Amino acid sequence: MTPRQSATELARRLISAGHTAYFAGGCVRDRLLSREPKDFDIATSATPQQVTRLFPGSNEVGAHFGVVIAKHNGHHVEIATFRTDGSYHDGRRPDSVTFSTPEHDAQRRDFTVNGLFEHPETGEIIDFVNGLADIKSRTLRAIGDPAARFNEDALRLLRAVRFATVLDFSIEPETNRALHHHARLLDKISPERIRDEFSKILTSPRRRAGVEHLTEAGLIDRFLPELRATIGCDQPPQWHPEGDVFTHTMIMLDLIEPDAPLDLCLAVLLHDIGKPPCRTVDDTGRIRFNSHDAVGAEMTAEILRRLRYPNHTIDSAVHMVARHMRFMAVQDMRVAKLKRFMAAPEFPMEMELHRVDCASSNGFTDNYEFLLQKEHEFANEPLIPKPLVNGRDLINLGMHPGPRFKEILESIQTEQLEGRILARDQALDYLKRHITNP
Ligand code: ATP
Ligand code: MG
Image (cartoon, rainbow, N blue to C red; front, top):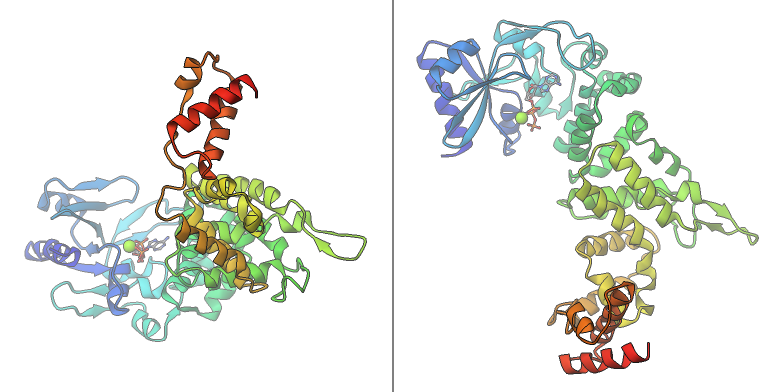
């Protein structure tokens, strides 16, 4: 049973019991746009009590007032009583809700395209907010007075950019003006909620337009002010004919695969974030960005921690930013060093970052092609082979555990990676020679 069929059955039961029940919000919008809805929401005249009585085992969720989650065939459906939100004092959530009519329930929603209802059996659209016209013209418009709506709940500022980005809609001028005007309200919103909206913008195939919009509206300054300094940060034109660091980065966001993973999107966005603080001009007048990779990696860690990204995401993005300049030197690496470099779990993403780093600037492809060739060459064996000897062998040869252990085992691994040692007896010979004569 599909999620839609499950939700339809739940709605039918509400209707048979004498209540009104509609599909509401995102799932209606997505059907009209021929997109797959993430989840189905039902809006109903039944009170939460009546809903829980009809669907034993369902739970009222405390966080949103009057919302019941019902499970059907493994699908979760949110069932919410038609309601009007009371006043908002904190810019984040209403102080109270009152159960009310479908019309009022539509009007408390954020954007007209999110304010539509659909009759679950007939498919009829019930439109109190003129959302159908905005779906047709692909327009994102706040319901009611945009300034007032952003003041009530500042997360809507980011939701506006997110929906415009993901749906490829343009933001209606008055809504967009209010967005610019009220960007500072975002300071009331928790980093976690900002992060979740930002991640959706960044993983959208239209991520470039999304980040540009956040920047134009002054929203980016509220949570990622470091990006502002990349605008106007000029670079040597012979390496970067495309322009400043911001332009270079935006082109890269466009060039990565549409379904690029979040870590890669973050790494691309932040790979040159260390350039503005590292920019110097040498005696010959040449612009330099010494150490921008290391500085950028530190900044990346700080930014992503501030936005409460999980450690695995932070580690992976920091790793990619820290290593992005080493791609310029891969052709000079000894085999062992190259294999270790390529063995990083992030390597496939780093290849993509390097590809678009070059494609958006000088157009060089030699390091990328060299690495593709090496991937092919090394494909038949594991990059890091099983060790031929271990600490136990060293102890058997009379050594005491200590820092020298790691050093010796690593040098054996180097011999192995370089293809000079292939078997255990060769490795043991090597050990004996090295222990007596380090
Ligand atoms: P998604 O595809 O991300 O699920 P959605 O439109 O379904 O998009 P949800 O966050 O699931 O968004 O919310 C469901 C509906 O609840 C929205 O369509 C909208 O009508 C309403 N809504 C959600 N958040 C807000 C908000 N901050 N202010 C006003 N209405 C909101
Ligand atoms: Mg939804």
